[in-house]
Length: 168
Ligand SMILES: [Zn+2]
Image (cartoon, rainbow, N blue to C red; front, side):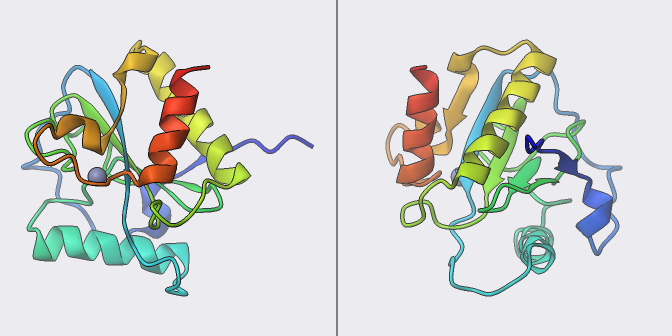
């Protein structure tokens, strides 16, 4: 039987209510940007606990209105809704307008892309590209936005996945 990925709604995992009153609209979609959360893969948290820890960090320590990413994907390929896609995210400094943020949970300088993660990324990226009329050049890695200090996000293994996907 073919495994069909689906998006798990934010209401299933978010332990706090989000006030969307002050949030800016996403605007016309120009990019999809891939990230990793750079979290330690050895921490034995469930997805729900891990997602709420990220949400907590983004809303309390960073002072944002909601989690920074629009989607988060577990290492095994479960897709979770993050911030409502109607609103601008907080994931690429200076480039959040019209930019959909997808973060894979873990450290992809160390972890490799599993089959489940590959399937989930393809499913989500293709669905979003179709919905917003984007082409393959509009799919980016976080480091593509940083010319001076590119950094390592979304991790070498996700970036490699992105380059291979781009060349198909
Ligand atoms: Zn990033």
